[in-house]
Image (spheres, one colour):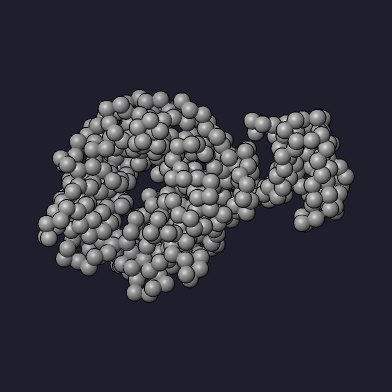
Length: 497
């Protein structure tokens, strides 16, 4: 297993930091961290287990085959890496992990072996306990899937497969087909439906069980040619038979995410199809009745000329009374994954009537793309996605994880303990200059404000180094000295008066 480089950084700082800091705010841990490797990486989904740990699944590029392998990261409540595993099958060209669930002390992963559905059960040490594969219609492959565990403890999956097709003009084109699949927790196939249609790019993004457990509701795109193209809702029986197809109110479409608000209403997040152009490129949130009548609608955006996009796999999440909606600000629609633009994770905490409680953005110093987010058991929210800096990376993305408290903040509340010092920081208190005298060779000095943001980072190559601090505001700062391996050497406090 290859080792992972963990980089902790804050968006206002352009130089990544080589250590991880977690913060605890009245029982709510917060952190912001990047996992960087030489391979391209993506995290699709994340869950929280019964111990407060987070397990992230996705893919990592295999440098030998140049195809993706299944990838798992497990971190604790403070963002510390607990385990990392890569899952590779030699008899397939690509291995994807799409979704994960925690149930009865085990993790259930739904992925694909290119043209097969892949069911895996692993324990808390990320060791495989069971797995199975299921075929799909010939000459098709999986492109997207999402899943739930229903009230019967079955795994219910939706998404879309892709195949080559001929259009009426005789040209060969890509065509997508929605599918629905049900597995038992033991990995047995119960039923499946693959809807091959002539509608090009038919997609299904997410599925929920009806509150009365009588069937399912799937939300996607172009299920029916008889309805206006845009967001459509597919009503299904427990056996996955189609009952009814309807248009989503306000035209919400494009990677819809779902959450049951209560026994009588559903919350939907996606891109807008509303006639209002502002709403069209906003992060749109809609509540409806179970029978698909609109209740409340909201549209959120960073700036009027920026395009928004909902999180790719999970853009709305609810835990008790905390409801969060997540997406991306300043998405580059022409190059959504490796853009040269700056972008942000966009997070909104809302009331049940979709009025905002607060709205924040995270990132902005590179290109950020959120794939999923979850409301956490401590009242906060965890977001996962990618960070890409085109100036130093080429088609190689890092994993970006942000955990905020219920106020949307990453808050510094811990002082760094003072160790036995072999280095001297003076004058202390100081004003416009601080001096570092140390016997450590080729170490790194970092000065951190009370928000946990690194405001100065300096390589120390001499026994005495002077640093200009005129630009800093008066207050208390913390410092760390790190060796060549980014390991902690010393730490302490410095005051600017």
